[in-house]
Image (tube, rainbow, N blue to C red; front, side, top):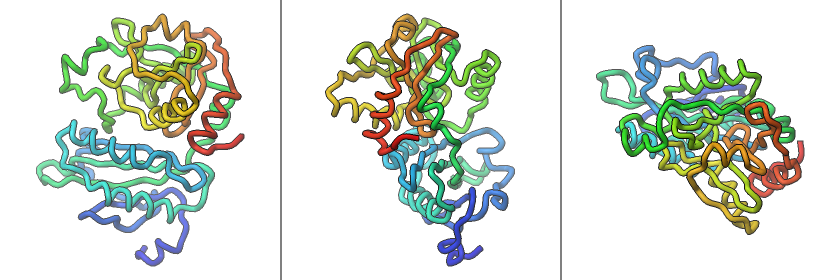
Length: 295
């Protein structure tokens, strides 16, 4: 497919390659290829970002690009060409057929072993319908992550806080949640400090005070969480990054999981115990933060 065809033909799910500082041709997902020796495939040695797109609008694109660069630095990868990634993302979005919700993934790999040249590409995927989770809430379970809350300080080589391609453990946790009759997970440390979800940040409410776990606890800085805090600050609420105990999580007036896909999902059940869901307040946050109206 040549460039002119790509710019005028809408496709389904697709891939755009990032090569030499430019966004290369967009191809349908089923026709995309990747070298089997790429370290993204053989070792998961790379980083990525997932960006929500609502009605053709990128959600927090700049924050995602900045986080891609931060994760790359943590892995000692070459500095990514963020302009090329942005161009590829925009090109892919323009080439994809219009959808209410899309997910754009930026992927950046160390490349083929020994070649000393990084590789990058983006995927544009049709997003799942999360309206039910946003409206009605999700069931979550707490799982022990297997280390203390200060691991980022004691063992920085474990890359806590980087969004790497090594997602096997996160997927295993989600399968465990499903086995327990839940939709998602909230990780806690071995010393009972709340961390994050496999693909989300945690937001806890006590009265008019909203808190999220601190990023120096070895968790990923949340782009959606940052945007929601901007909204809460503008609404006059007290917001803070904090150390939150498991007991404080259990006593919360409300809990949300924040991510690029679901955006804002209230937790309606935690470890089998029901939690109140303020659907009206959640809808207000969705509208004020992301311009998302009722489902």
